[in-house]
Image (cartoon, rainbow, N blue to C red; front, top):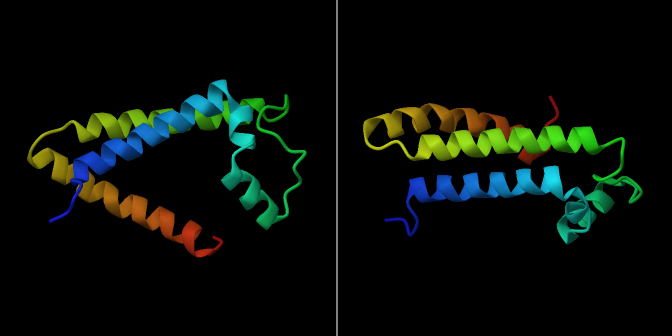
Length: 110
């Protein structure tokens, strides 16, 4: 038996998506200064001059914020479904999420 149920895990991921959306829209500079972002940027060889809060990148970060917000809200609404429709919905969504995350996590370029 797991310590955390599937619906709780989905709600946690939805809250994470909503938090990322908020920061991408309203405080993109905060994400630039995070240690993980700096570490990944240095590992990929990206210059530190690039910033989420610059005027050229601002529309892109806002669009990504809206995208994360939409994904977070839709997952949160879908996680509130009770009974059999919950398992039918997430049974289909799980394969989609898994198939989209494997190429990015394994370094495969499409």
